[in-house]
Length: 334
Ligand SMILES: NC(=O)c1ccc[n+]([C@@H]2O[C@H](COP(=O)([O-])OP(=O)(O)OC[C@H]3O[C@@H](n4cnc5c(N)ncnc54)[C@H](O)[C@@H]3O)[C@@H](O)[C@H]2O)c1
Image (tube, rainbow, N blue to C red; front, side, top):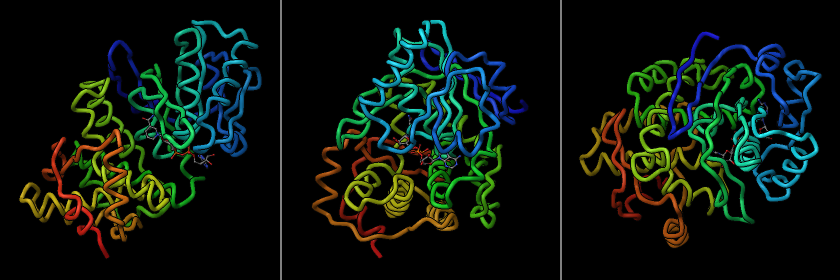
């Protein structure tokens, strides 16, 4: 496997490696159990070793429940999964959040390997150890910090994603580049005309993963710096909830908003702000939408991720900023 890096998150060490995943790569990890997204298992039958017990989970937000968590724990009990065992979780962010949560709470934590199969999963959800399930309509209030010992990336999984899923992953990829890697941003910008095709260069994913890993390593339990990862999320979350649009699209709109606000305040060069917005648009993501002030205000006040992050240019951001909500809304009004 050619490309890899290691990160230290608190007492946990994670190795992020990329290459071709097949049966023998999975077998070498000697897993005791595999939790896999049902759709992924159907599409990629060739990666599943026959001798390892597999639990299929229907991926998507609806899998992140207490009931699913209990089913996994009961399954671990049936397998007599030991504390020194290893579980591989294969899927997008939802199955990884659920599976990692189950593993982290089984006998206070067994071995965990993650195989992200979505772009968002590879650049974001797999890294940094946040595991979660939902509580009714509340998203992710129940969870643990439990990083995987290994994350295995194979970008060929992205070939079967829907175009909208790829765009959403691109939003997170761009976000990460804006936060901490100008060279990566410029690389993506130069390749912007081919972005809507199905391939995403492996090195973009690894570079973005490294940016997130570096930030999390510096602030594993999110007491400060890790908040920069919420670029675009303050207004973005409110839009996601009030308009019912996808998370990635909402974050993209949130980023457009803070880029314009930061440029208007003189914090970010106009040229950088425009470049970020152009790249978001080049990915096929919307850059304007109608927002109801009252609804957005209420949602932002209730949001654990509120606290505005503003770009200072490409590759640097500042967090915990005050922003006038009306100005943020005007910045993306059609
Ligand atoms: N833990 C974290 O740090 C973190 C960070 C960001 C997001 N998340 C979580 O991630 C979740 C979203 O994850 P997601 O966007 O990866 O989507 P997802 O896991 O919800 O999957 C969406 C759909 O894609 C399918 N799918 C997965 N891989 C596929 C593939 N290779 N080909 C075809 N279809 C495939 C799934 O079956 C599902 O139907 C949310 O629950 C969010 O809270 C967690």
